Image 1 (tube, helix red, strand yellow):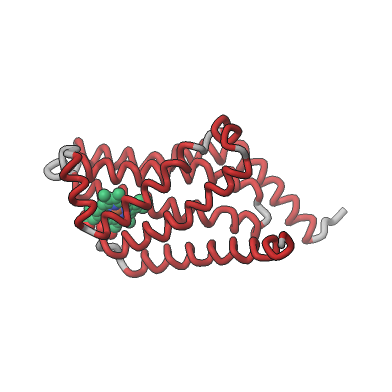
Image 2 (tube, rainbow, N blue to C red; image 1 turned 180 degrees about the horizontal axis):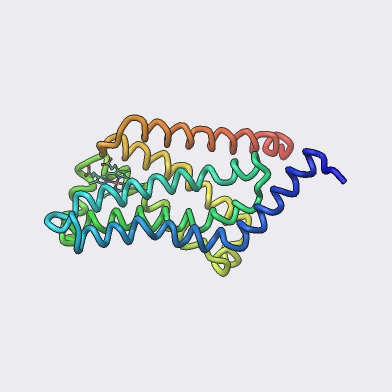
Length: 214
Ligand code: HEM
């Protein structure tokens, strides 16, 4: 019996889905810990030892940004490829994005000896820090409600509404990155384009629902 191309592609997707479900999530969790472990090693024992704060701030920020943007792309990718199983990656990717971003802020604050008045003065003095700070604050409720018990407590509908915060947060983080960093134009362009496409995709899906709800 020969399978049609359509059937073959459906079965391949099913098989990939089964594997992604079985090993995908733990694999993602472990892989995304590697940059943090590398950063810790480089800072305590490796090349950053002499002055760890500038490279540690930079690298944690870059990983926070990469994962925030990657998290936005997962749902559109899942829908477009038919690989629904990758939706499960949203939670570990989102949690690591928040962890790297909050870690980035914590490393920067540690460089200031956690001096609250100095930290506040700097955040209010420099716009790029203020913008980054607001982006970080927006991520906190998202990270705090990513667990099943919290989702149940908040309610599915409110939880989905709350997660729209990720868009202003990523846009502010992009603004922060553009004004703070020394990242190449290519990186910035890729992240902006992916964010823009993910946003457009969401808006295009939300519009028909809004017009029928009226
Ligand atoms: C969602 C939150 C945030 C993300 C995703 C983020 C991401 C980034 C990125 C990608 C860079 C550019 C790194 C480079 O090209 O050199 C950067 C730089 C920087 N960020 Fe953030 N950031 C966030 C929040 C914050 C906050 C709250 C602070 C401190 C109040 C902060 C302090 C800095 C500093 C000082 C730099 C300059 C690092 C350097 O040039 O060496 N960031 N951030």
